[in-house]
Image 1 (tube, one colour):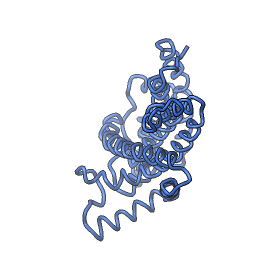
Image 2 (spheres, rainbow, N blue to C red; image 1 turned 180 degrees about the vertical axis):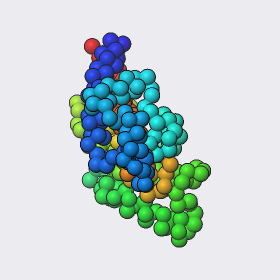
Image 3 (cartoon, one colour; image 1 turned 30 degrees about the vertical axis):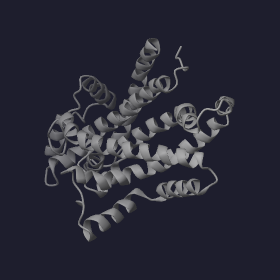
Image 4 (cartoon, rainbow, N blue to C red; image 1 turned 45 degrees about the horizontal axis):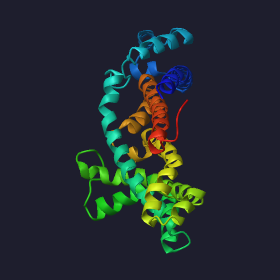
Amino acid sequence: MLNYLIRRIVGIVPVILVIALLVFLFVHMLPGDPARLVAGPEATLADVENVRRSLGLDRPIWEQFGLFLWNAVRGDFGYSLKTRIPVVEEIGLRLMPTVWLTVCAMAWATVFGLLIGVASAVKRGRWPDYVGMFVAVSGISFPAFWLGLLLIDLFSVRLGWLPTGGFESAKSLIMPSFTLGLGVAAVMARFTRSAFIEISREDYIRTAHAKGARARVVVWKHTLRNALIPVITMVGLQFGFLLGGSIVVETVFSWPGLGRLLVDSVAYRDYPVIQAEILLFSLEFILINLTVDVLYAVANPEIRFK
């Protein structure tokens, strides 16, 4: 296991380098002149050139990338072109709201998705199966922005139970986390049902039933544990998507997180913030995949990495 972890960690380095290069090139292909945005609409050409030199945008592209890479290794992503504060501090202010939103959405989506999936598999072909899959299909079909607006209209405007946006208390998490996690819960339910049914057809499950093991033991100890291997993979990927894909939900609910920061940064052509955020999201995906591989051995001790 230790050798496997070392190889995976070493393999992260070239992946990050390629991602950094692609992000750098993509950001510099965006239309607009960040020097003009920083200098202001009334600045003269001389002022714009001075700003461009101060930002290092007058250097060759390869030199800009080398400087960006060297500073990134040291944890220095420069200053935000919009707020003029360090990018690390800018992201740090927005990180925890996004983490809280993602963790809450993933927690309830995983619990309810697993329960619905297992119930549908155990009672397949009967009304619990039909109801569970109807809920799952409905959850996948709802666009996040539309669902968020419906929730705001119902629970904030009409009933006045929940705040419309922002992150002021635990109540502020209810609607955004539900909107963000509904699609994940639906996918989780369908995925769990398929994996559970496939495992339940294996010979060792029939043997457990033949030995007289209680149905509850067979379901939760034998079938579910082996069905968790593909489910864990899906959970890891969905968690990464939630971290990087909460842009729509954060915009709808005015959530002060990384997704909304990325939207504002793209609109302002804030190169340093865009580059740092995309690199952060990419690193999160890589680390989540590594964690998922380690969890395989926890869920099934027969799995060993050579």
